[in-house]
Image 1 (cartoon, helix red, strand yellow):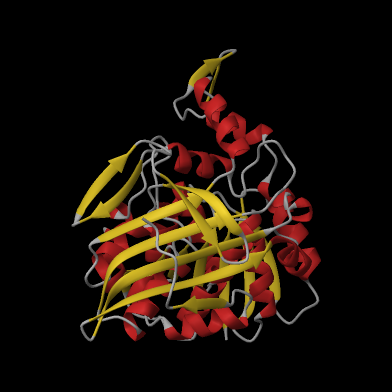
Image 2 (cartoon, one colour; image 1 turned 135 degrees about the horizontal axis):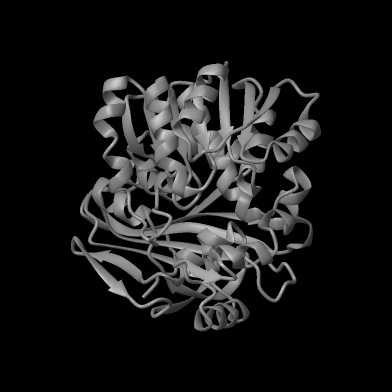
Length: 399
């Protein structure tokens, strides 16, 4: 049916590539492109032999001209961006120049500032609309599936959703004293930033890890979780009718928090360049280089994840409470695609989102967040492609 250019070759990209190859009726041909071509070639060699035709290329995703040349050479129907969030805008610029559809899993953030918001990408709306191409923003799990979950609930179970809590629990154990389950640089920037939530149309800012709750997660049990800022709060508060408060919580173990605090105290999580032996280095980037590669955690990670949305609102004047979630097993993910569940839960939705665009179900000119599309075909695809969801109308609420 179509051709996809996949930019990136880390843990999430590997899942996207595996799932595209499983879905060869839609993804007849893919190209894997990253700064390190040997990583792309290794994946190609592993997956060649199936129905999906695979090629590889070297590209610097910071360079718009290189991206344009690659897109014009391969002529994809969609570009799946699973590179770094710093590179979203250059890839969007290249897609605009070549009039090719675009999809990513995380919003743009400047490399020199830990700032997570959609303003830079939403500024492309008119240009994408005039070019007649579609951009899908934040099509991982959170953001991504959490937005689809909310849109599905709004469509079928609510007239308005007043309170929304997004809960992300990773109960996996990789055996290391300290490691991150996705790109260490992005992960640590995210969790060490100030927290925030939206209430009555206004942002409320908190100190990092200031607000803690304990929640009893289905199939996992009680875990400590902390309020973080997360990008989907911004779009959901705009796109979902009736929102009075929206929050995001993520679980962390005490060992992780203790190590992170020590690293912060000695300056290793800083993104401000320092001079070392006559060279300029960024401490957080150096820390990333010495921490375990998230792509290597798959074979040693055991346990499950549980990510979902708890909602309260009204239907026909009556109060409704609703919880929809997915539980994913780290070892089952590794058996299927040689990846742990964090990469799996991000990569599968990216493939599904690209499929939605290629099949015309999510095809309309402009720049959109996932909750602005019809959620039903995406929800069906989650069950088919490895992320089955469960729902209950009597959930335990977060205070």
